[in-house]
Image (cartoon, rainbow, N blue to C red; front, top):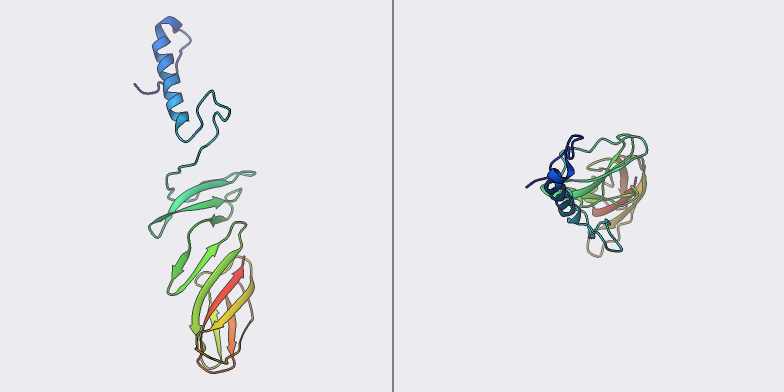
Length: 180
């Protein structure tokens, strides 16, 4: 028997509805027992763990509330947080990768992005696969040439890109950028 809403009605005789009451309390106990500590224990009602079905889109949030949920990204279930008042949606797990570059959002909103490139001459503007929301804070560049004496520098940080300069022409490198 499944849970029956609206029990008891004002006109119900409790002795006649006793089986319905017992059924409803049994159904409530069954539902609460999923991922929760059992009734009559010191931790009654506390979560053991969370299971969340994937959402198609970020949930609606009002002022003074946030939303934690899961949704699919590239076929894998990832954890997200949505800020108050339908604010920014932040991916908390997994990494985005495309064409040799990627990014990962750390708790608190700090983002790490990475990739590689080859300077055209001695400079290259590196454009991130997705821009930082606010700004680039730091970029580290490493030469891919074995035994190379190339000196790299980064400058002109903006939310969408940075300028890579090398002391030699057409040098390959990897980069790691931190921003928000």
